[in-house]
Image (tube, rainbow, N blue to C red; front, side, top):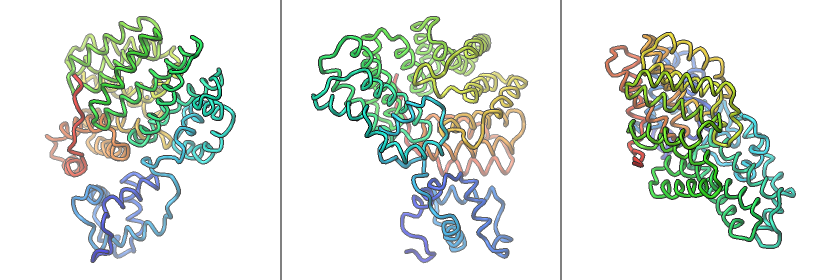
Length: 442
């Protein structure tokens, strides 16, 4: 115990306790204010300054002094720690949870995920899981029910990654892929083999994404090859197109290469798979806008909107993230990069209709960062900083590289500003931003 009552490892401890309560850093700052007596509260700085202190404490920049140490102690005492509430916590049986979520095939918020986690392990013991275990042991031939179990589980992993950091889900996903591989190596009818190969490809896409998030270039490349191999063997062009779309984020800011990958994916699926096509067209609009190709960017996002209006985003596991709020954020990215103010305002209004307490944490990483850029360019610095802080909270919780990339742009955009709130955010961001960079997979 240190002199001010804070244990060693205080930085990780504060962050873990905050995340366990599903609080943003803004909410923790509010709780610190509420925990203060009247005399201490009068001496506390502004809310934004308290948030900055919280960021410094969690980043390990400096240790809380006696006043903050006591406030933290009171906050934890007044708000007992719930169970399994942190975005970084892994449910006791993630594969059972993935199957449960995938079987529902509905958008679920974090609270629902946690509720399902409490019952998923028991549900996994029913017939499909038992059949899978027997098939893996060689005592039972996989049937439609067994394969449907694996298809549901794959879809569930794609939905869970919006709520649980990839580094936590990755080991369970690899176990899932190993089970699929074991069944593929057994003698199966062609229709069952085809379905399992599709599952392998859909899983490999997500595994490549998780490996990239963790900076593992070798495994990213390995999973990418597996996804493309599965696409060829199954003639499933959508798997290859999706992998190209994911790779368009992985190429380290190389807009030309990103655009090439997206174009290849669009050519691969042609007029098929409307949801994937709408996503890739919106991605193309984002990259074209960044390259300054205004005409192509506008054509792409407008075509994407037309296709998205009639698309089923639940048709493939990877498109479940593309709800109206996330799609509108892609439109906002295009319009903001093109400095189209009226269109940016319209896109932000649309996003606001779909954001709320149940919005997936990972989605906030990107959506709030894009809103911060747009708001700043529209001259609303205060709201821009508020959005940037929300994006920073979410990105810190999820450890999401794409969130850090978008926040890098926000911090750079804020640099010329002489306003105090923008300066404070840049200081907080510099203290929080991890130094590790993702590999560029060119």
